[in-house]
Image 1: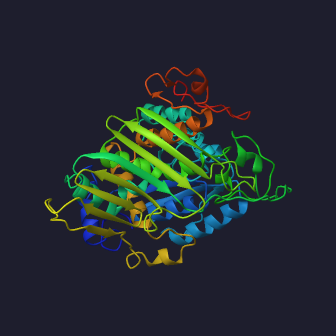
Image 2: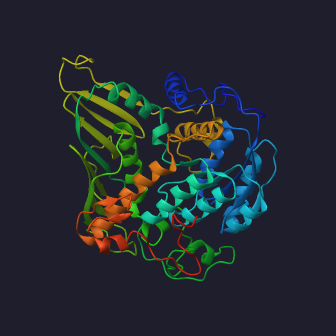
Image 3: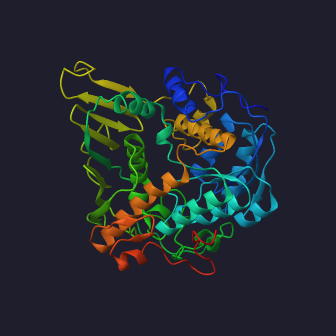
Amino acid sequence: MTAFSLDRRHFLLGSAASLALSTLDTSGLPLGSLAKTYRVALIGTGWYGKSDLFRLIQVAPVEVIALCDVDQHQLDEAGKLVSQRQKSGKVPKLYGDYRKLLSENQLDIVLIGTPDHWHALPMIEAVKSGAHVYVQKPISVDVLEGEAMVAAARKYGKVVQVGTQRKSTPHLIDAKKNIVDAGLLGNIKHVEMCCYYHMRNNGNPPVEPVPAFFDYEMWTGPAPKRPYDGLPHIRWWRTFTEYGNGIMGDMCVHMFDTVRWMLKLGWPKRVSSTGGIYVQKEGKSNISDTQSALFEYDGLNCVWQHRTWGTPNNPDYPWSFTLYGDKGTLWASTMSYDFIPEGKDGPTKGEKIHKDVVYEKEKYPEDLNEDRIELNAAPATRLHMLDFLAAIERNGRPIADIEEGHISTASCILANLSMKTGRPLVYDPQKREVVGDPEATKLLQRPYRQPWVHPTRQKV
């Protein structure tokens, strides 16, 4: 494919897509064609890094120039898979160090699919090198990393899209337009968000020698170096605060970001949280298995709850958000939404509204053979990539701009800091401090392991 054509094979989803397309068009989705082929690189070739790259290949004219990973086995496999996916059939150049990749190649787009502790430095270096960036959520492991990332995007004038693709999910776009924006909920005065998945890896694997194909020193990078107890891929690294921010940083960030988008919310006025390891104490994991958080706005509270044990309060919505208005309630997740009106006097005459996720199995049959693919998320990621490209073409801001990703990420990090300190926190994004709390302000920046240097907004 030499031009960016929105033909039926590569994009149209039916009625749900028409809605998504019309919504994205208001922000500048290019309905014509792109004259160029984008030169692309991926840093972090694990499960979701490859998934993001394959979705981009499906909707845009790209040539994957280079891949980077510290696991040689994972890197070699990714090279073969990419050669089978991209039109040229070429195996990209393979690197073990992202700095060398960026210095040796002129790139238009860099995708970052690394663990969370490796988001900030590659993103900043990529925009400095002249590339636009698609970075996975949460954007950072501490608040001041996020501040530096926003500053770098603005300083170098690059588009940075965050992988919070709920904002590009067809049925959630429908819910925002036809339920929330249409006023069917009335005055929305309370929000609940949750995740009840049993997704907290735990256990006590023994310390073992690092295999020759895995550069554990580089994988650890600026984070504290734990004794090596097996490959950290997929869920193992997520279970340690050394590398991320637990379920808050992994799952709450998606739902909170979606709620902020739907309700046009900025920074919360105050963040508080309680929780800890209440049940699953038998293993090495040091992230909470139970946690509640409160994000306060004027006249509105957004409440988060996760448990990695027990049952969900609503089996149909185990990872979801619920908007409560005086005229109705909206339950929503990655799989569906349900609008429940308060009475029979409203626009729906008391009728409930239900919408399901859009799948594209017939449009993209290759999805069915992709290892670990989230079929429900693939259409959303494709739309998210199209929005990213639209922002690049018009030199504008994407729907999941780095600043929006920073607000959502930092709010979740502040919830964890509130749980740690045992008190509510008020963050001042202008002064970049926790108001009246020097101790908490010091926690906005985590120490980096030498020789890595923590980025600052003044020095990007």
